[in-house]
Amino acid sequence: MQIGKRSSFLYYLGKFVFKWMFILIYRCKASGQGNIPENTGFIIAPNHLSFFDPPLAGCFMKQDLFFMAKQELFDVPVLGFLIKRTNAFPVKRGAQDMSAFRNAFTILENKKALLMFPEGTRSKTGQLGKARAGVGMVACNCQVPIVPVKIVNTNNMKKFKKIEVKYGKPIYPPKEHVKEDYLKIAQQVLDEIKNL
Image 1 (tube, helix red, strand yellow):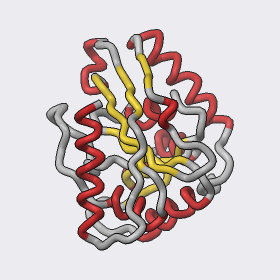
Image 2 (cartoon, helix red, strand yellow; image 1 turned 90 degrees about the horizontal axis):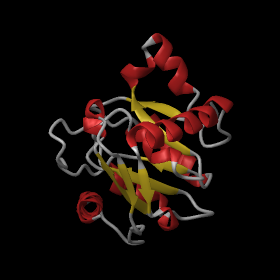
Image 3 (cartoon, helix red, strand yellow; image 1 turned 120 degrees about the vertical axis):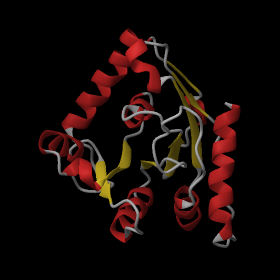
Image 4 (cartoon, one colour; image 1 turned 135 degrees about the vertical axis):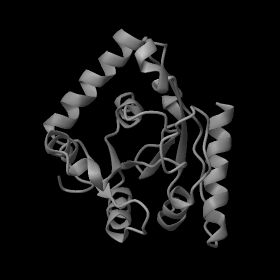
């Protein structure tokens, strides 16, 4: 995959399959797509309940979605092959992975959509976790808006509860910023998710 350029046929096939799986099996409803910016790079920032959150956040958007995935997933034989071809790129957890951030910047410079979880990791309780500064840092340095997204019930997929995806209004980072603003912006995103 060429970062931030054209998506593969496998990406579009997966987007179609996931969308109809969520609609037919989980009665999924999506709302707020009118809040998604056009003709610019932007960050999609959902809460994180399940491994299904990235395809769920992306399948109801007309824009292609790129996302970070932990390095270990790329080492799993079949899964690694698939996610490489569906707009994922690796990030090393527990360290400042500059190559992952460079990929993120390239995607946004090419006016594409980048998924980042403001919590940084999946919630095991179903509740919102602590804000992490990464989403604020990328938004400020690339000067792109963040779209908060509330995902409901992907942690209960075995119970076949109705799933919802709600896209909130974009949050624009300040042009003048300091390092301390990164975490404040991430917290603002989580607060908006809570209110959706």
